[in-house]
Length: 80
Image (cartoon, rainbow, N blue to C red; front, side, top):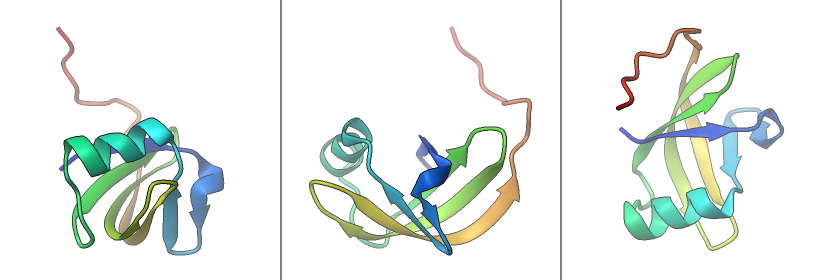
């Protein structure tokens, strides 16, 4: 499941809006995400959200929060 970093100002109740143009292009064009696809959104130092895409347009992607967990401070990522 793709993961993207979000800002806390993009979170409103149970919806999160992705406004970063590079992320929108990557999700819509490269990954070919559609309404109903699921993503993981990470708010650094706070929470990890499992979301479902509600709407995609060229200015934003609106998502609905399915699950919210406290972010693990130690990321399990290997970079080479």
